[in-house]
Length: 330
Image 1 (spheres, rainbow, N blue to C red):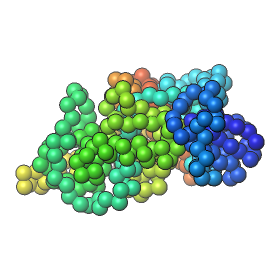
Image 2 (spheres, one colour):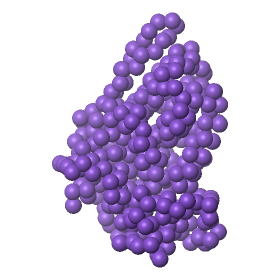
Image 3 (cartoon, rainbow, N blue to C red):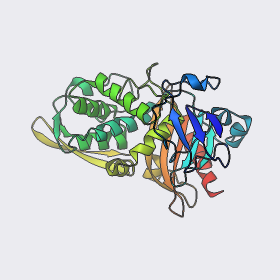
Image 4 (spheres, rainbow, N blue to C red):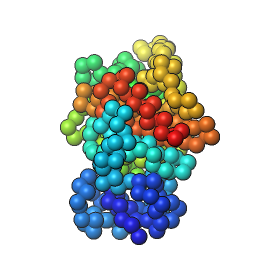
């Protein structure tokens, strides 16, 4: 049996190669408390109540493997603080660098906001009258322009949040689902993250604007995004190049078009030959840099999740993502 100390304690009955993913006999148990310390005593954090088979359908990699000189060398053409690429069909990890380092994720936060909203079983077509919760006071923050008093369905808010990355839409989603208690909604976000094994995540906003207590890791985002892909509404939203929102303001119907923030979906950037970008989520703040998470498929229809955190600019982000996605065809 081989132990891999990651953000989890990973036990395998058989491992073909370090960092290449767990086979059907492998499982892991998540930490009872988050830590990125690769010297941590495993027995102090092992959760004996975790279910067998937890990692059977996940790509896994050790802390030491993700910070090794070989890992760094493998992403030499990629400008990002954290890099991760794993299959969703075979769970093989193709690239992993620095994936357990906690850092701000910017608007990639919104994938967990969407997940909690969808898991709440709230009627997506129910209309909500927006409150002052939609107000975003951060200068230059991306907003859809919603105002207190607007009447909007939860579905519209989710699509605006995921496609246009509206921070006001994210606040409205959290407020609608929680009955106006955004702090409580954030607690549910963190609870959901832990349930998925994303123990290095702590979110204090539903939108991802910079806060010192708001952080996650590339691997945690992979776990969260993988769960999100189980929901057709989520997959539909992240695949769209734009969305026309309809809502009511001051008793009158209003329509507004919101374009995607994803250059692949807009056609501004093209993926490597043989790779189809199904959809994803972008994120940008001063502290997070530029971030991108994608779901892509290869020419055989096999799925992959790719994550880049902390790129310097848009050109670097998309050229780096193309370099990363090129690993799929090797």
